[in-house]
Image (cartoon, rainbow, N blue to C red):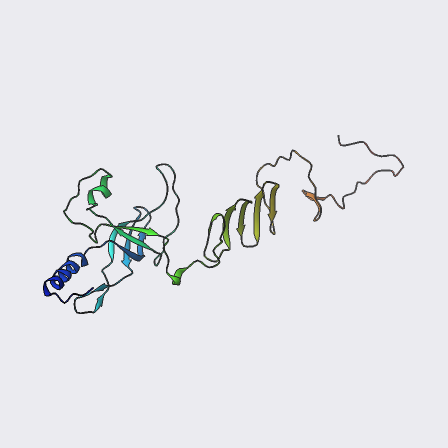
Length: 225
């Protein structure tokens, strides 16, 4: 709100100038990410408005900690290629000492809401990088086109890679795909049905396997020995 009172107008302008340099939070994106240190160079997504009315891109922020959910023993990880969007938070106090040794730690400078005290949380997206065909139920992980996906719902778990799908529900497990390969031992403790495709052990095809050197008759052979 603008005021006709010169003193009040001056105070308004002074207030805007006082907080104009504070960095509280804004969207941005990854420029470079170091997976060893979990630090990144981050570009702010909103330009700074100058006093003459023009706009200026804020310089790239360096050594920015990136959020990865987890605990002291577990971590959720994912790649962070250049252009990954998210939100930049700026600390109320200097975080240099905390970054090096954890906390509680004293602030090494009196700065507040400074560009050098930034944190980056990936996941916030503009329309440009919105996830296509995002499932509306359960929880999961997927690449962008959905060709590799694990999806957990109340009904069960579905793991899909291209044309191969593994589904686990209360009623059992179903695999659908061109080939299933097991390089270790397999133990079957219940009846096994083979409804199509046949069964081969080594070079023996059970559907067409016959024995030579036998005499036909009406009797039946003994069971397996």
